[in-house]
Image (tube, rainbow, N blue to C red):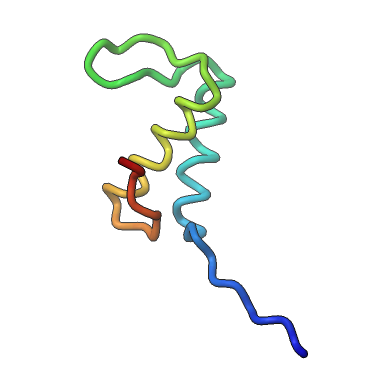
Length: 65
């Protein structure tokens, strides 16, 4: 049997937003929401990138609750 093609969970646009957030974190210029503290956590940088992607309307799965 032939393998079934899988759909992308995240769009290319979402991947770009996350990549941009990761580069900003590496450079030390990524800041979090209200407090404006510098982001050093890799996980938080990814979360910020995905959040920006959601706001721009990119295909991103819903947040787990």
